[in-house]
Length: 349
Image 1: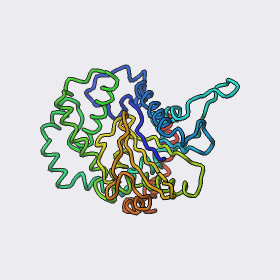
Image 2: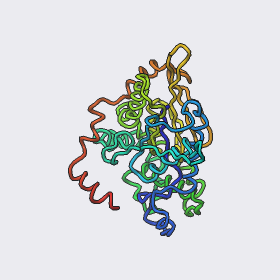
Image 3: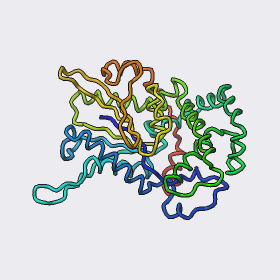
Image 4: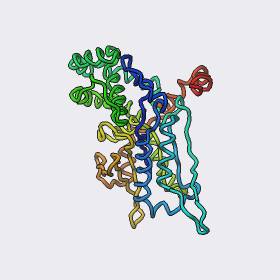
């Protein structure tokens, strides 16, 4: 079973704090981009759901090597991963009454070389993104919303002339964090304004996976990882579950790589689950499910069915599997100065 999920509810990140926002001391206490109590509970509940659904398959207690756990290199995703794993393998009492804990090894790499969960830091992708953003179709939509963008700029101080769609995307994240924390929203963010933001945020997700090349670089790495893992399972490895703790953009990229669009805006704690099934004759199948933080919804894979033959699935996904050159694009862009910055400045911030 392969699972990629979004971290739980969080405080706003620093990039979301706009110029005209009055200072709120609560962020000094909780930190920026950190899981809230609500987010911690949501991630633990995701783990509990996985335990309930796959209890027989996983077994009662953790066995070394049965789980592969990976997180992006942020506090909120690493903590979310710990909480999901705690829900899957909660502490138990052994035969002599001692509490058994199940610490599970977790993996992550620095953001600047993470081509699984931060693959878009790649010159080829960035050039494609700029082309799409400046395309006639997108610019027409920007002009159509100019009055709205002017209103937002006036009340937030955010420069809405460079990339107003992405700026709206960031402000939407800020408002969702505020809302989740039960903090009163700013006066400018009326219900009507928040509704106007929705199609613009959806457009940003569409732009991020606009064409086949962007799909390969953005979501294709996760698809490639899933197929690699499932092929390893066929070779009788001990792995049973692969869990990846990431971000909303990873959820959106993965579903769009499958030519799906739901969830259009992934919630905190939402997840994509890909099951590999086997029938009595030994034939393998794939089932794709979406966890919307409340219930599991099975999805029909385009060109196939809800229960799709594995070989047919793999064949249908070949166009979104990145080439070696595309996979290495991000790494080729890492300079000595960037590595030095990461280890001397970024890690101290």
